Length: 181
Image (cartoon, rainbow, N blue to C red; front, side, top):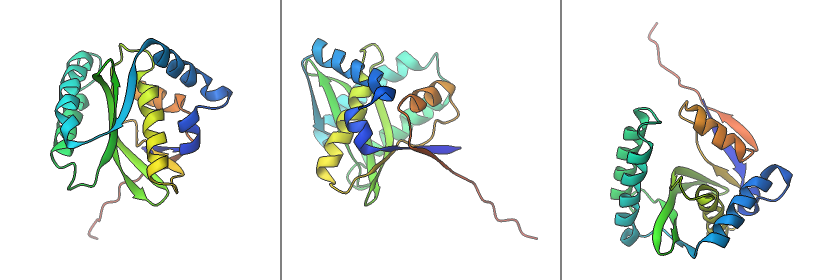
């Protein structure tokens, strides 16, 4: 069980041979859509929830029960968005919400991405959300160095996706239990 840690600078540009495919997906998305990426606000949350409902329905057959659990967690995170100190961004294409991401600054140099969703039927939507969120956060937080995109929940497809962004390192996580002797 490990979190995937990336250099923000690499995610903001997709520079280099290893991330060339991500850059190509973004270029295609930019060429095919009239798009923008805006900070997540309370006013945008209902549209994000609508998109989340569609995403959950479209993906529930190919993914396990954890999708429903994550769906509920996202709803709770949106409900307490300000109190939790969350921030994020929304990707729109042709005026419609097609992706969003939210998380929190967990250290002066690290942002923890709790949730990221995008329409899988739009080529490049996921790489765009990742890149644009990172760019926005680097402007807001000049000391940002790392993006923690959390673990893969034991899902092979998510593991492959996270590895395709070429993490700087995997941060192992452990569970400790107190045992009375």
